[in-house]
Image (cartoon, rainbow, N blue to C red; front, side, top):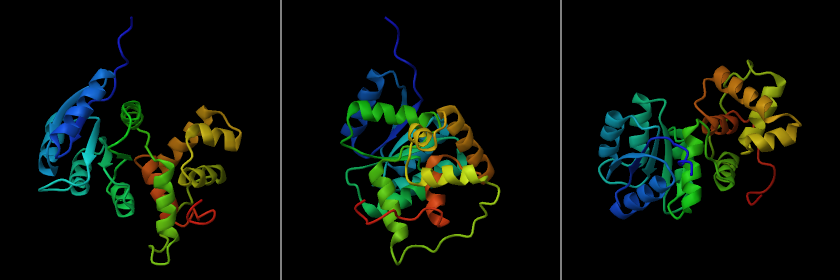
Length: 226
């Protein structure tokens, strides 16, 4: 029997010991190494610097230093690290703040064990974890009358095809969905996505989605419920 496929090295930051223990057991059982735990944001920053994890599961609400502030500090020092934000509530006000802080994903704590392990592996490969509900909230935020004005960031380096890919990324499409939409191979889609990241100096898909909305490249397709 072959051994489970090795996963990224993970740090779990949550102020509830039961959550940390449960997530550790789930990930360890699926071949994902948990290298440490932290009970608040201050401990998370210290542990991240000491342990250099690939992925951090970061609770948003923690004492001493919240998850958003801890994420900003960690990514400023460890830009190759990936952070998945955790919360018990799918709260609108957290969505953009988490992604703007540099998070690569957003999960509810009642996530299934398989979804948790898959999410960690996905983000560990450098991809981003953006559920359709999260993408919808970004659309709603930037469609709101009091939302931020579009930025005048230069998208000139992108080819017409890359602009098309970035637009579809902004709507939350996966590489497989992009390939079907554009009638391309997934390998070609990955090449386009990589070139977009390089040209616009983006970390991952999460930043690409935020940029697509902030520049006004992506507009809502319909009502808020779409």
